Amino acid sequence: MKSPGFRIAALLLAVAAAGLVAGVGLVAAAGSEAPGTYSAEPVRSRLEFYGKQAGAEFQGVFHRFTAVIEFSPDALATAHFDVQIDLGSLDSQDNDRDSTMRSADIFDIGHFPTAHYVTRGFTKTAAGFRALGALTLRGVTKDVPVDFQFAATPGGAKLDGTASLNRLDFGVGQGDWKSTESVDNAVRVKFSLALAPKP
Amino acid sequence: MPIQTSKSRYGALAQAFHWIIAALIVAQFVLGRTAVGLPSGAEKLKLLARHKSIGMTVLMLAILRLLWRLANPPPPLPLGMTSGERNLARATHGAFYGLLFAMPLTGWLMSSAKKYSVSWFGLFTWPDLIGKNEAAFNFLRATHDALSGVLLAIAVLHIAAALKHHFWDKDDVLLRMLPFTKPKKSP
Image (cartoon, rainbow over all chains, first blue to last red; front, side, top):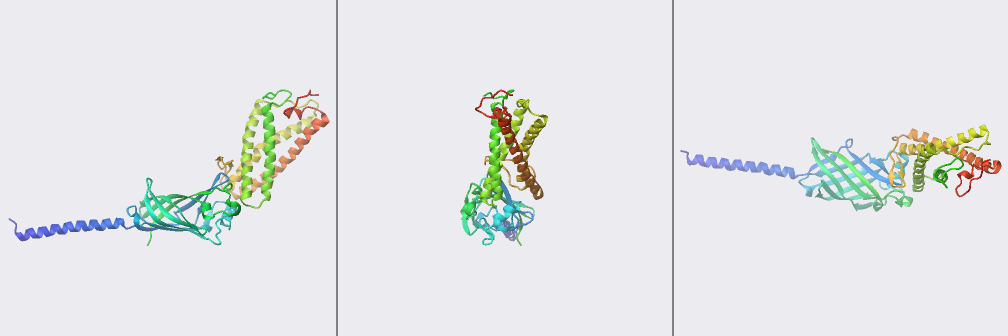
């Protein structure tokens, strides 16, 4: 025969246990909703561009860029990308082509040394995610969607994606270089970022 | 005119190869020399892109032409030629065939070494033959340029010889490569 005091203590204990479980659950849920903040590791990250000149594709990379990525697959509303690209660091494996691209008629890095990409929102897609954001390049700001996949890795995350844009929307190509007969308007960008938690 | 080469006359296909390739090589000289004189820029790249497309066309035609020639040997040289003349004619024709391959191949290698891949009139891109190599590019460019001088020299010799055969020797060496003419009897 149990005393009423024992029953009350058991009830209180049960309530406390349930509260504890719920509380831990809520904290855990809250934890998964907060986006992780990362930055791209320069050595293991790659930012490539692909253009077409007279029908033949050429390829290059930007050696220097910074990417601050706030992202969690469960919390798209609070996700945010901020990417700065040092245009002078471009490398298409040919010095003549590189200096042409840095010149006033193309990127004009003397006046516009960096490109900047900032997101405004995200959507889920069949293959992964789509960032809606604005690219500022050569003094022109225009929306460019970026499609990407995000995967958590031990100690960080991996972000792989692509974007397509028209160079002439940004005035990349003045004078003779406006002609799409020599260089196609469409340019592809491809990236693979190794993300480390931002301190 | 028969398609195939006979004992007295080049056939229609051999003539077509000869004259189409000759016209393309003239175009190549004009495009190549004009592009070299231009400052780097879109115009220069446009001319070079055409030069590369035509060059690859010449390479493909040269392969077909050589195969056709192996199956259809050219008519024999006129009997009146001295052995020195025969050797010079054979050497000139051999050099032409060598250059029909060497010019496009050095050009293709050059483009590969500089990472300017070769497109065929924008329809498709040929694979790069070698990786990025600035030293190889410089050597290949010098070779391509020197060979173009050799090609020009033997083209002048070839034309002079054809005219000499026609007007001096009065044989059928020129006529048997000309369409729309009747072959005359070999002396």
